[in-house]
Length: 205
Image: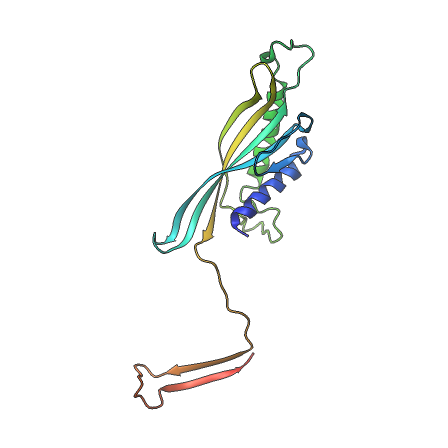
């Protein structure tokens, strides 16, 4: 599994478990139709990932430094306050208030687990290591779904950046073996050298 997959799944589960206002309605991946009765909810999508060589060279990298950009959209229903005219939606800010409340809860929970490690089975609070090197909020952008007359949903988009490191090469290991044999040769030996082997060892494990 790629580190990016682990980061995506971790953040989705974190928000499902901690953002109680959406009752587990946190979806990840490509956009799909959502009904108004399913709001409020949270949709997570993924932007570009900047990759730089961390160690090694440009031609033979050993480690990559990656910065995954994610968009977390808080969708709330543009419910009408009965004391406000239906023809003046600008006076009704209940949807914006709810979006701000949920967005604030998301930001708080991400900040509390900024290395994405607290919920890992091997979490060590003294080290604090996790799936990421940190996490930062890049921007928050409000927008609406619908048109000026019929606003269907209010959206608060939080854009975050998650830095993490991956090796450039696949870590391959030899299969487990039960026997071994090793030979130590004389320095500078060639085909004409008599008895080139200094010592040998073999055995079973």
